[in-house]
Image (tube, rainbow, N blue to C red):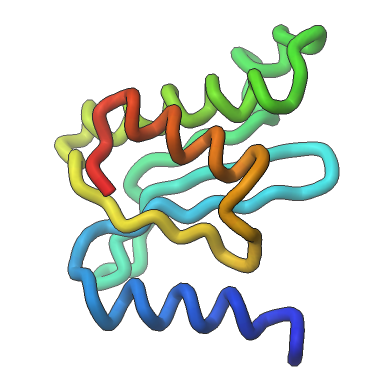
Length: 113
């Protein structure tokens, strides 16, 4: 149960304080995923992952450059769907490294959180 404490604490605070859509990030050993979630309806509004063909073609890029590209792409897709304000859900991860790079790229792409 210890490993889920940070995730539960983060998500509870986001849902209690904010009624914005949630930008959730998941990082595996090999890939990075981000999605915009509407918690009221339980639906995914926009998503992006490093498994997509447009990102698979960039194999010689580092993981940090890939995280920056993913942040810009999720910002572009969510703004295209009319979502500019989101709450950033870092999940069980600390706010550093690839998670921080993705968040800053999403901010630079036009998302407000």
